[in-house]
Image (cartoon, rainbow, N blue to C red; front, side, top):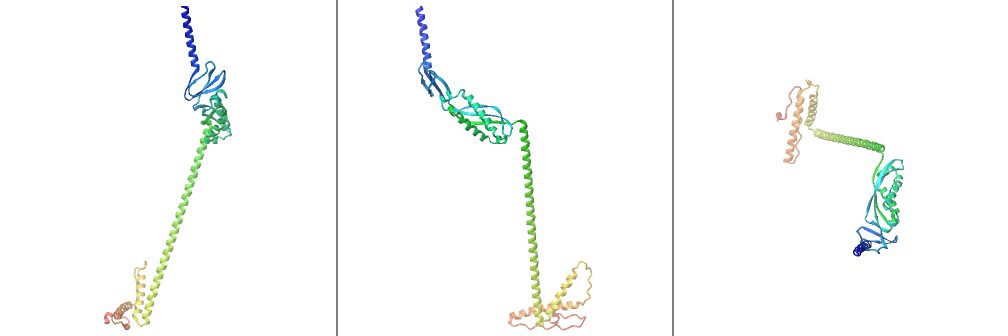
Length: 340
């Protein structure tokens, strides 16, 4: 019984030892990870994803490293800017391990080292800038931080892919002052726009008044020109009529003289009768003279019509009409119809 019990224990111990040896010899590396292998405490190689065999009792896995891109939160910290404004800043860091051996043996506590390096450079970069630049140039801040931190972590086998500033929080009193400044700036811009609008309105109004004055002056000039042209044509017609009467008088036609005087006489009576301050017109003149002038006009018209008829029929010029016989004062002049 003792032999059986001792043999069973030996087998069990042998099986356990075999399991331990196999588990320490055969390793399965997941996708996205790499393992470092140490032999007697010294790094010898790196295991890639898949099945790997180690030398039992001699080799062992040193570090299990995540080769995927990872994110680290940068804790909030207070930063004093170049113009002595204190702000609270936090951010995030994206990094990826490219060399498992360097990441495992070149730095201790890799994530802690990256966080502290990033916080230090945030204070350096942002402390050299004014508050206004700090709030408006986040892209420049991120680019500077990325360049500095990535260069510093390169010996560690790490590639820093991105650094982003999440929040920049100035003190409350500084925020209120900035709000007042922004309000004053907007009011100033609004006042400038109002003044510019009024100025433009006044310019347009003056331009419209100028155009209206020019058009009015051009209209007056055109009216004066038209009026002068009318007077000129009227004078030409008057001169032509006078010349015609003068020619008729030279030809011995007394009816032309009667026509001319009668026309002037009638025009004078028309002007006198159209006056506003004249209600009763006393005419101390002989009406027979007017009738005689009118008779002369009719005689002249008749003679002109007869002459035209003679020229149209025979081609000869008609003899001038005989002058009217003088009448005694107070008698009614003889009209052409009575004479005929």
